[in-house]
Image (tube, one colour):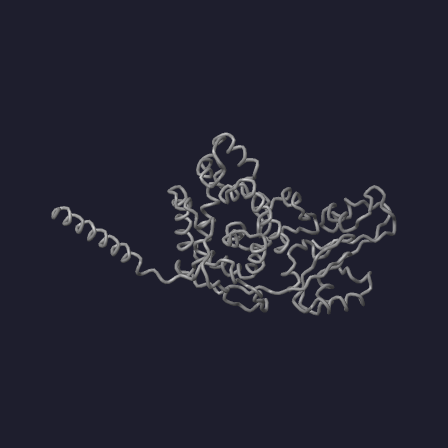
Length: 386
């Protein structure tokens, strides 16, 4: 009995020494910012001037996140790739990640409110970091576009308009609504946020096929992501752990050596236009700078709204009523300030497009109702800027 008691004390003392050793390894890590959840977050969004930086508010209370805090995030396969991305971003990629965090401030409030509305994991606010670096105009080599990197076909499937004049994939508000709705649908289908993120990147059909091939009898859940992981495209294999790395740094930037000054999120008024109106005219009616209108409306590819259909325009907060009043005073034929071309004998849309350096599809969209084979002499065509 005495020998057993002695051994128990030796084991207990050894455990205490191990714990002390572990603590000593982390004692030099700076304190981290509380991980952001959604409780008590932005009850009233903190909107400020476009050019005024502000500190992104953090929630006072930690909420467990089913993606970042999942036990599967600590699986060796996940940890290896996650840590390699963390090492990259705190090393040679430090400057670029700092920019991502700063840009995030411009959109995080809107994203968080939509996340809360759909009851989704708060960590999804960091997904645009790895998708676009929070650049609404970002376009990948595969032609995915916008904050959430929608492909053209997928965007149209979910109701985002994509044309030669208007691309709602670049609209940070509309694209956020649809991207989060897609992720919610994926999770309801796969019962796993890891499979849902893989489906977001590689397509739900591919994920379903791989599950059928490699885990036909397994109950749906995060564990199956590890089963199909080796069979996913290389980009998708990196996608989930890369997201985990971005979210970990984003939740505790100080811990990883970042002290971002977040860009401020601008409050806005929304107006609906039903006729072609160029950006400079919109700015004039709103009594604001043209660059502000362009910054707030990256979906306007050619600098004017679509004729014959509703186009939502964002204006600085407080400018909506001013715009409505001034806009009514502008004659319809003066609301479109870009070039116009009067059709003469022998003109074709192809020749006109070539002359002004635009595509035929742009001309057709700017001039709804025009029949390419029946151009009327004397008709005035709107010609968008290049």
